[in-house]
Length: 392
Image 1: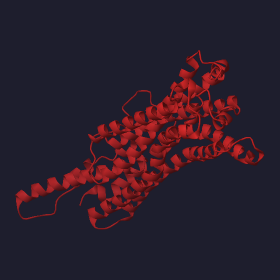
Image 2 (image 1 turned 180 degrees about the vertical axis):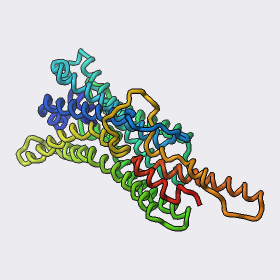
Image 3 (image 1 turned 90 degrees about the vertical axis):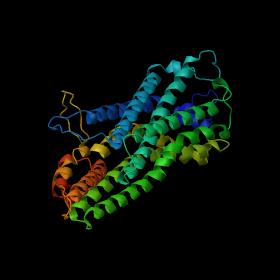
């Protein structure tokens, strides 16, 4: 799983709280991580593969939102591979891992593997957090008609730039002055934990606010097209709201255990002796949440695909046609073909008003379809019956 304790363990003079969790049934813990990450990895790839029975349609243009969702899944896949590799080495070469100690400072490869694998996991999951924040920002900007294809470049710069900067800064402060002689004390590790949990806390705090504003903006957009809020449009707004709710629900389920575990371990670190009897229940709670993290953190990838796309089925299409994101299947061409301007007396104004209306309809439809629930059949039924897609 993704925890700053993985990097802290690489210090030979690690703290007692880190030693407690890392030495608790390491074979069982690594086996749990491998099993959870492997299942999530296989199911995530299965979800993303094209399926039989999906009729290919022409997508008007790519959307930054669909690209971001794919990048989130890629970060989860690569992070899961890092967890599988790290845990496999931990299980297969116990002597190699045991060389990370104060008494052995000659062999640099165990420490190099420890730091490199921990940084890989942290970097990928941290980038996934930043991409999830970008998705919330992009959803709001799309509805406000302030986002475009060029915005994805800014998202790349922000996501990878911040992820790399925070990861390197936290590691540099943690291993100062050197990996073989890390400084002792809780104050020394705090900057590393802050840089690790900043993107996670940002998603927990900022994304619900942005999602709520997006849902309100969608409702205003739907009302503005007709001046009324029909049952079909209300259903569409509810589907968008449920989509955002499921994303945040998956995130809270997968990462709340990390916050609880880190809080317990920090409290134990501040105690003179963590092995005292009054702290027994706290130690047990920390160990239980540690195991839960090993199960839930890797499962984020698969659970997110369920929130993004729904269950896509088992029938994989090996012809490798270009896969279409389900909610992009509602092409705005219907609006362009069926929409017509209000009748006027001058022929020149007819052409101008039709052009303006068609452009406005297309922008509105693209904004709504990129946010709607990833259920192709229900969306298509809603599309055919809703005035928002049928023109005026």
